[in-house]
Image 1 (cartoon, rainbow, N blue to C red):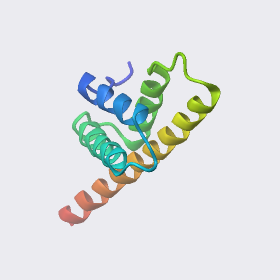
Image 2 (cartoon, one colour):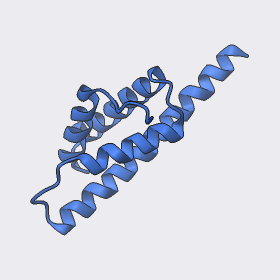
Image 3 (spheres, rainbow, N blue to C red):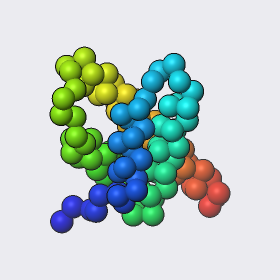
Image 4 (spheres, rainbow, N blue to C red):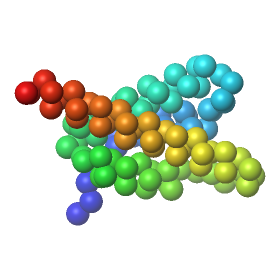
Length: 104
């Protein structure tokens, strides 16, 4: 049985952060970074491994509505998602390293 998806609040936050992202808007970067931190916090609370978190985020991305978006818009959104996903894995791994060194 697959692990549960993230909370509806997290799913909504990710959708908003991805849909409203603008490379020239610092607030967009901040929203995406905040969403990434909350995803990692929730992933740890759900006891998801980094691989499970990544798979869950990929499923979530596939479920996001994208109807009406042009091919270029879809490609841009995919690039943003890939950056977001990489950032989440990095934050997740950093939290694990900090946790491991705190126990040592």
